Each structure stands twice: as structure tokens, then as C-alpha cells.
Length: 337
Image (cartoon, rainbow, N blue to C red; front, side):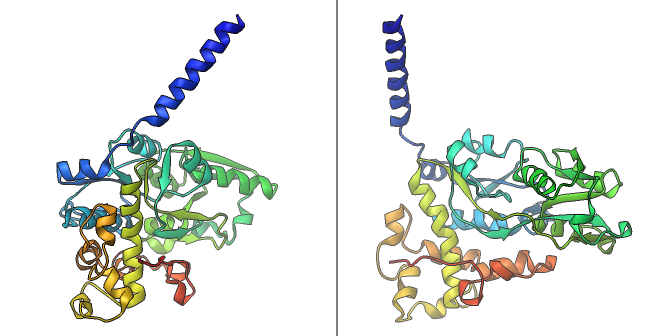
């Protein structure tokens, strides 16, 4: 019996070692072979990912995907966007249905340690909030004791909601709905007293309403929600490209380089600018792309400030902690050298 158990244990270890020895998928090669980046995004979230009247996706997350396409393929338009729900987003990435996920997804220890995924960047520092109808006369989340609250399942939002009410000895009744359109409709129709989500998502929803003044964002922010790009663990070359595509946009803003003035910087003697623009060094080729990878991103997508102005400013969300570190924000690019 003991011998059988030992044999089974050894076979299990061997299988585990074999699984760990499996080479990671070469996402970069797959993207080049198909000529397209496949990016998982959110469903109809204004400012982050939403198709316009012509069916062209626009938004902060969309531009993060386009930056990766520009770096790898030289063309920011070579992206296929796959709308994903909170329930299927990680499965879509794990299975290879999408190359990367950029859809209002919070970086957390549990997700990175347990799902075989790695967060490559943070493009939006957010926090969870609450929205109520103005007619309810509620001015604080502490007034929501006994309320019904709309929340999406399988999210950090659901966990934070329970933690907040428990820590304040308050009661609530969750109204759990997966589809974002349905949960918003439930809130508008009065099925729940409040709607909780990342504050950016709530602001996006309010902006989409013709009667936006009828809804109030409560002042409490009850969590830290760093949102960004996610890739599969093990494919570290692709991880580097996704991560540094974001940092290139941050660095460009720091240096004052925009999509409009980039040509005027080509002869700059500043070594930081020379390395960013691929005029010196082999940093692009070290990642498996061309040395002008950042130039492609800046020309076609813009620096981070341009991306913010295009997508988030119209929502009325102040940049705040999402600004550059030089202006009191958290966006900071490590040096390219």
C-alpha cells in the first residue's frame, strides 16, 4: 500500500515537473503570423472601450491594445477587439482566445498567484464607489444600511462590498447580475437602491445617460483598484512588450513628446529621448520588435496625456492620481537604458 502511494506521489511530481517544463506559448509569433493582436476589452464602457457609430472601438483600454499592435506590427489599427464579461474574461485569456486582456481588471495577489496570469501595467488607478438616484436624498454610503445594491458577480467589487458593510456593521441585500447592461437597467428602474462598481465605471455610466443629473456619486471610495493589462504567465517576451508599450506613453508625456511634435525631437541631443525614439541603443530588438517601436506608438496612439484627454476628460473625471509623478500622480516610467 505504502509502495503504491509512493509510486503515485512520484508520478504526480513527474507530471508536475513535465507541466512546468512545457514551453510557454509564443504570443509574439502568433500575432505576427495572423497579422493582428486579439485584445479582450469590456462591454460598452464609455471612456474605456465602446464602439462608435461606425463600429470602431474607442477608449483608454482600446488605446492600450492599439499601442501593443503599433509596437509589434507597426500598425495600431491591426487589433481585433473581443468584448468579454467579468465571468469569462480570465478564461478567454487563459485559453488563448485573446492575446491580452485590458478591460477594467483589478490587479490583485489572488489573481496573479492563482490564475496563471501576470499584470503588465496599470493604466488607471481607480477605487470602488457607489451611485444612487438623486431623488433618494442619500449623501453618504453610511446611509445605505439595509439597502439593496446592484453588483456584478465574480468581481473584486462583490468582495469589497461585503467587506465594507461587514466592517461598518451594516446590512445590505445584493442584487447580483452579470451583464453590465442588465445591471445598469436594474438600477435605473429602481430594482436596487444603489449601484456599486469602480468609480470610473460609474462615471462612464452616468455620462451615457441623458438625465445624468439624476444620479449622484457618493463621496466614499472603499478600495484600491489598480486597473491594467493582463497577459499569460511564462511568455515574458510578450509581457515585456505590453508593459513597456505603456511606459513608452508615460515617458513620452514626461519628455513633452506628442503625436504632433515627435518629428521635432528626432535630432534631440537628450540621451533619454534618443533611447526612447530608438535613435541609439538596441532596446526594441532586445524585446523582439523594431528599435522604433516607441515612435510607432507615439505617432499612432499618442502619449498617455493625449490618450487621457481623448477618452477620460470628456467624462469629467479629474486626472488626480492618474497624473504623472512629476505632478503629484502615480504614473511613473522606469528608465529606458
